[in-house]
Length: 570
Figure 1 (cartoon, rainbow, N blue to C red):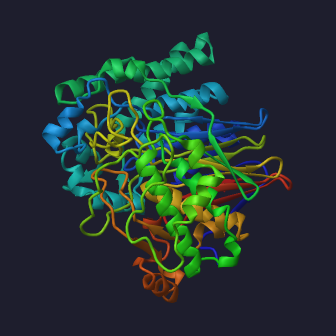
Figure 2 (tube, helix red, strand yellow):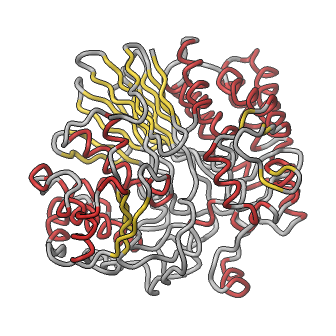
């Protein structure tokens, strides 16, 4: 039995990690916009209604499928470290860590990425797609349960900066569920970009979009951000902002049991999902039985192997030679599978695969975590399929508790530097102009003329784990997409966290109660350190998807009841 209904439509469908963002995307579809217009509207709205976990000035990686061209593109939407970064300072003053606060700031990428997507592939103006976000910021909305949970969990972090508590706290305490959150400065900032677009629109749509972008990266917003950094020991300068451009790339692609699955490149963790699929392609998953001891053991160990490779090889490809062709090859998958024993769990992070000509990046042994893990990272998600068969998949992110709100602007420039390393030997060590290794990783699955499915999730390192399970549930076990999303889930923590301080829980696997005690006992007997979670735990990711049956013309929208996602379509 589903916890929430699967939404079915014939014209268009949107699903997002917060229901008001879904509404924003749906409104654009209803007004005649395409999937890109709608996805950008939903993504910008998430920077308001999920502003604890998504900043308008954060990151926004995305995949876009263009039906008339039969082409999929990736927009990185990820900023790099400022030119003024002195890596030695992290070693000298912070014991090789990336400190909390303003020094984590990388160049904000999301505004540029949203506008680039509109310019190249959309049909509407920035003002059109930002309208809902501005209204939500200006007039306020009721704090939802997930936001209330994160605000309470991060209460001490918010208190580092009075301008952050001025927005997210009231009477000395974090806003609670049902309280009204108004973000006047943020609404004014986005409106300023719209006003600049309108002023330039007489020269055409492209000129208007360029003016909206310049308002952020070259105008008053850029000057205000740079001045705050200059006055408060930060690194971000006007030059960093003015020179930033998102990159349009060809996505990575892997064919899993007849279905192409696409991801962004190894500047994010997206290829981990493809590596997992490459190993599982060699296995009869149905014969193992869904969520059996044998099934969970195999998938958890496959995840561990792929995360070990992520830890050692992944980084910004402009700085790091990532051997993706080998990592996704069948021969490599077969060799890695040989290291999995049916009768014994790894118990700790396994070594990376050996690849000729490549030296694994990390030299230090990762630190073991103390205590229970906190809430899983940040991020939200939005996906859309329109009547023409275009698809949009984006995972915008960045939080409002790791860095200061810029006074007067109502936003926190991207603190994604928390996903770099202070270890000079690490593939993702921080460096000027280099991008952190991002956790947000939108994905898409397709079979030409038959099937199209944008999908993704929040949750830091949990993202590809939840996405993998939902995808296999749908494609291999034949569950409808809402059932596939809701099915009991498990996660492994047997690898270093992508977020500073990058600690890990050797051998740990977390199971939702619905998996059942006999299965958990069986996993414990072969060496997994089993930890139980409630059913539908937000600590196991939160997948949203639109599954399009191109033959019948039906669109199925799914959203995970583990958080506040909703699907909406017609």
